[in-house]
Length: 283
Ligand SMILES: NC(=O)c1ccc[n+]([C@@H]2O[C@H](COP(=O)([O-])OP(=O)(O)OC[C@H]3O[C@@H](n4cnc5c(N)ncnc54)[C@H](OP(=O)(O)O)[C@@H]3O)[C@@H](O)[C@H]2O)c1
Image 1 (cartoon, protein in one colour):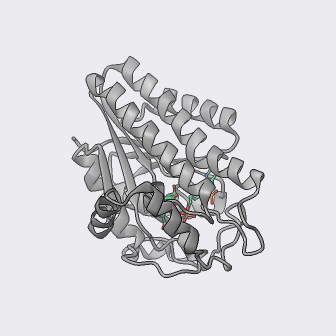
Image 2 (cartoon, helix red, strand yellow; image 1 turned 45 degrees about the vertical axis):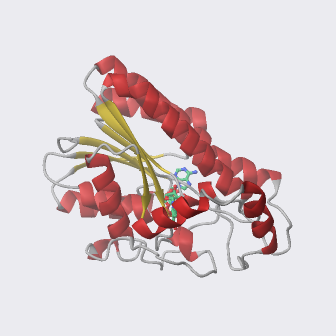
Image 3 (cartoon, helix red, strand yellow; image 1 turned 120 degrees about the vertical axis):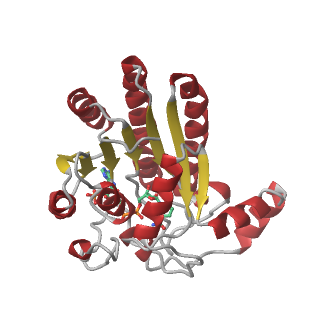
């Protein structure tokens, strides 16, 4: 793929999205950066502008799906994205006092992680088809889509749904020259994973995750699990009978007692940004 010139990144105010924004920022590139937190978005924008990019900031809550779609439509009307990365997401688990997540938690997770990005991708896809100039769409999912997670059923199902949507969208858009990349990271060292008080094998830094995601998008890869170690683990997991996977997960209750609700503000002290990008250090 020729380097995209007009790029939408949702969830650009922190973690993987901020790292992607910094990695894509360069001269003759327009970045449309979306998130809810205006301060953090402006700090990311400043880094991207320093690298020569034209930056447009859009403060939007994905959970307000009509408002989100309206903004996407307006922004695409003006900037004509040739790459749209749907990365915004929340993580949440049930508290140690709960057996399962509350209905409200489940609804929030599905709105932000599945309904918003799926509807947004479909809106952008439709507009790209009408332009007849190809393009690319990337959906940031998770390896959580592949395993039963008793303390995070809402999160796991939101990502499993996004996987099903992404693979189907890919089939629909291929003949229009529009690539869909569905990317499932393992642990990435961001404010989201910092809330989870557990062992995090093969954890990547956000800048490494951003590079791996960019590589998938550039190669127009349909599907990727990053890093490679998780791709191997997931390949083995496919061989495990579902009945056994569910039984095993019921015996293993992750200690997530330090996990704060995904709707709470993200800590401003966690790095969650590329180490090569010092101005993002306190995002
Ligand atoms: N970190 C991991 O270990 C990991 C692993 C697998 C997959 N992922 C996925 O990677 C993506 C990015 O996560 P991250 O680790 O970079 O998390 P993060 O540092 O917590 O960043 C999440 C981003 O999503 C935005 N966001 C959250 N809720 C939103 C809403 N309602 N409306 C608009 N924007 C919203 C946040 O913006 P504001 O704060 O400005 O609202 C922030 O920019 C997510 O989809 C996540 O599920 C992460």
